[in-house]
Amino acid sequence: MRIITGKHKGRKLNTLPGKNTRPMMDRMKESIFNIIGPYFDGGIVLDLFGGSGALTLESISRGANKAYIVEKNGAAINVIKSNVEMLKEEDNINLLAMDYKLVLEYAKNNNLKFDLIFLDPPFRMKVIDDIVEYILENNLINNDGYIICQFPKGNHEIKERNNLYIRKHDQYSASEVVIYNYQK
Image 1: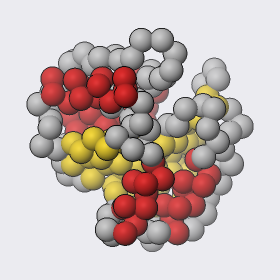
Image 2: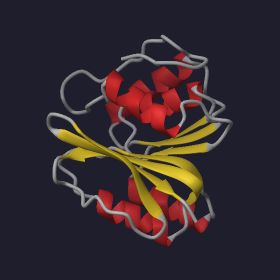
Image 3: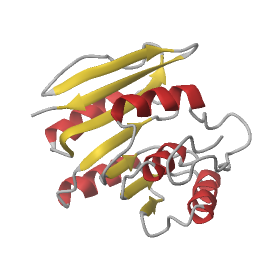
Image 4: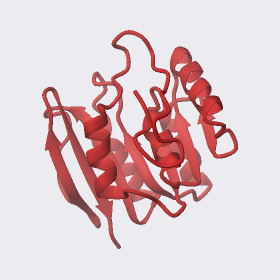
């Protein structure tokens, strides 16, 4: 796995061995960033299920200036730390080793808003619908912000709601990706 473009273009990232995490394929990642970017003039990223941190690091490479990566798995946290350190992005990335629910509550209580939110939970978890509703109910996304969701086929009800519009929906072999755009 590698950074596709931007200031860290071509840099290889560490990943977890085995099948506990599913790094997003380069072509899927490139398709997403071509829609939401492809480059950013700042912005704040939230990645609720960090894995290797690849989506967030791609965002930083493309111009996002601050990011929060949330991950509970100790081995994944070590991989994310190694990737952040390798790219020398420690000042721009906050790694939060805790449950995603606590981070959402913290964001709500501290009036944090995000420009780009990645939701790629473990496939056994069916939580995307609840998380999207929480984000909208608690005003955690900036105008013209994006929520990018990856999930197993049929594991999320894809629908427009509360100023959240479907920008793109793709199906892959075992998963789907939907890109939502928030417009007030």
